[in-house]
Amino acid sequence: MIIEPVPDIPALLIKGAESWVCVADLHIGIEVQLRRAGFNVPSQTSKMADSIERLAKEGDSLVLLGDVKHRIPAVSHMENKEIPAFIARLRSSFKRVVVVAGNHDGGLSHALPEGIEAVSGAGTLLEEVGMVHGHVWPSERAMSGGSLIMGHIHPSVMLMDSIGAKTNEKCWVRARMKRSVVRQRYDHCPKEVVVVPAFNPLLVGTPINGGRGGPLGPIFRNGLVDQSSMSAYLLDGTNLGRPRAV
Image 1 (tube, rainbow, N blue to C red):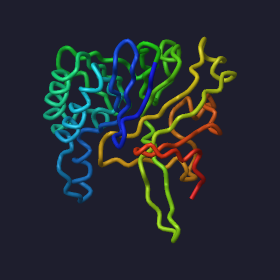
Image 2: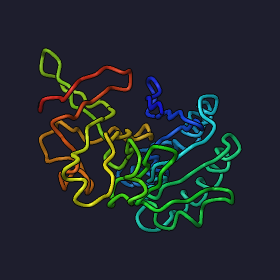
Image 3: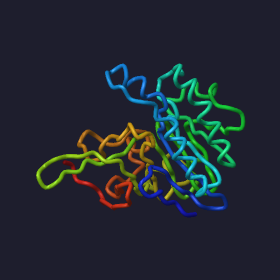
Image 4: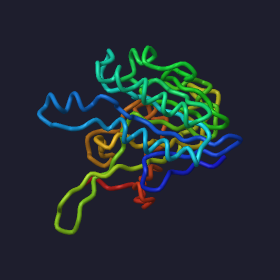
């Protein structure tokens, strides 16, 4: 099983018996919230669909790792208008489309067209890889693979240049699982967890080196992840190791 990020795009390729494209945290409809805050931002939905469709040449099937929509708990008018067409485009480009529910996805099922495989937030196993959103405890099935893939956190890293200017960049996160802790709850322990950055270009993320507590989600908050082994990778592949707080 090969798991590798797509260079310069917050998307993951998983190659086994099938080849999968994996993206997380599209947050369709976030523009409504931004407009209410005074920012006139055009919809990103078509742009995201274009980017994902271009990845169809890399993978046969697609998994959306939660937070397809933004509004909690209902579906906004914009989401109800854009999501069915968005998913239908992707369904025509990929052999299979699997949607794992995120904490923002209440009511999403009513907007999904036929032929989409919907999975609860506790996730599932695709070949040897567990797929979850990350906001609830993973299922036993999701934890039975060699790796666990999740979103939810919107990982980023705060960088500081030589004159002290700071920038916040999306990043990938990889870390080992703590077998002794995982086995207190699960029958099997994946070797690693991989956290996928938010796909929506309007979302940068929460810096993992920002000094404001650890990442969100039960597997991080309850010590199932060895955070001392955590490595951050920029979208261009640069390995930052474990970034220091800035």
